[in-house]
Amino acid sequence: MRKFAAEKSKNLLAHRKLLAGGLQHPTASSSTLVSSHSHHNLLLPYSSLLLRFLTTTAANPSAPSESMSSDYSSTPVKIDSINPKVLECEYAVRGEIVNLAQKLQEDLKVNPDSHPFDEIIYCNIGNPQSLGQQPITFFREVLALCDHPAILDKGETQGIFSADSIERAFQILDQIPGRATGAYSHSQGIKGLRDTICAGIEARDGFPADPNDIFLTDGASPAVHMMMQLLIRSKNDGILCPIPQYPLYSASIALHGGSLVPYYLDEATGWGLEVSDVKKQLETARSKGIDVRALVVINPGNPTGQVLAESNQQQIVDFCKKEGLVLLADEVYQENVYVPDKHFHSFKKVARSMGYGEKDISLVSFQSVSKGYYGECGKRGGYMEVTGFALEIREQMYKLASVNLCSNISGQILASLVMSPPKVGDESYESYTAERDAILSSLASRAKTLEDALNSLEGVTCNRAEGAMYLFPRITLPNKAIEAAKAVKTAPDAFYARRLLNATGVVVVPGSGFGQVPGTWHFRCTILPQEDRIPAIVSRLTEFHKAFMNEYRD
Image 1: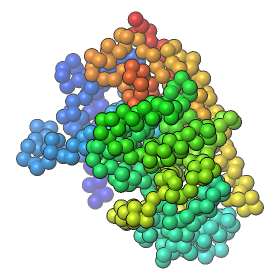
Image 2: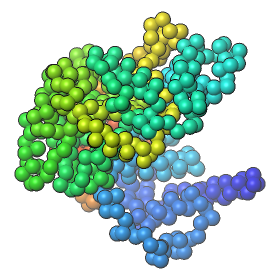
Image 3: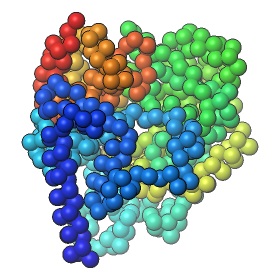
Image 4: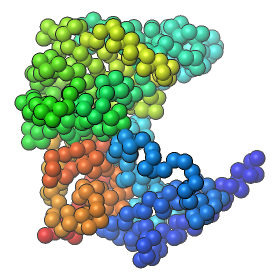
């Protein structure tokens, strides 16, 4: 078996070298993939047929030739026979630009000199640990002990793990049926962990929380899908979403067959949310027969990085109450606030402070272990807190949760740790706070450095990063660049992002993937590369942008 695997690896390497050689010397034929390796040449579009061939053969070099393997006419599933909602949904954060980046990365592995850069820098997605951020020690110690409880009884464990991580692991294991992280849990999550999360919510907000309101999920995304599945009955049901928005919302609305009702954030006022504009969009949708069910608010904002003022949140709560809308509050960046004049307030806290009780407003709050200072994206942990729903509706929510049995136990444990970290007097408290504060301070510094760099570029304006993990600069492109993008049937900001990638290896996401005011162009860039990498990103971006503007100057 080992000999077979080694031979297969050898064949794959040989195949990739052959493939890379072909890519380094493209012809002018219709099958051309890449232009010359000039910093200023555009990657030409793939045909879907050739892309499928490259994907298939790279994964399996012994696969039949394209002429033999591409004829699926006898198979039952055709592109026009799959669910049209799948075709309609898009997710730009992992779209075309990222697929291209991954292919270029493979090129570099085979031939480090194949492109005018030596690495791909992924600034497209909020994935902190993939870019060098270290996990919080206390969280990982507790996870390790829970996953391998046999070491809790070993004498040397106390010399390796902190006393409070050992104590917390014992507490958590006592709450898990069978003391086994490999077992299914209650479909809403382990009751003891939900109790811990509620205690954290109460400490944050100053108002009671009920463990029966908590649904632990594999990150926040499944919780969003669950609510869309619950609320959307047909295309006549609408969800108010901010534009720009995180593409999860447009994708999930499309998948569940609803209608996205956009409301535009005001870039000129720091991506402000004007309730009067939301009301106009609501009335317009209703005049077209759309039954608007909910309002999505992302705070702090993704991709825009703004932090809402409490007075603005009060207006939003009043609006939802008056209009009979479910308030869907995406609060996964609640720990990521970087400016002294802004603070995070949960919408539940705001609503309760205004005197609205359980039966006055329907509110769903989303939280995740993927963001904040923890950045545990791969652990897939999160939860939603649902309030203001009748028992018969809650029973339907539970039914949806039970279809998926339960979320993963490691993610559940992390969600409880995030909401109940070490406290003053705990052995891990000082190391925990040092790690947390260093990460958040560094993120703030990186955000400011990138913001200043972007604002120094010709035709680029960037609002300050108040929170979250992204910058969303506006780029004013020359008419020649816009016409060049049209010629290859690409949105101008996607044209810019593709050229940036081909010239520098820096991956950003075109603003067109998030939505934007028509006629404006943006891109989203994370602030997550480590501080020692930021100068290289700034240098590459600055050099590219100058060359691009000169090339297409009107």
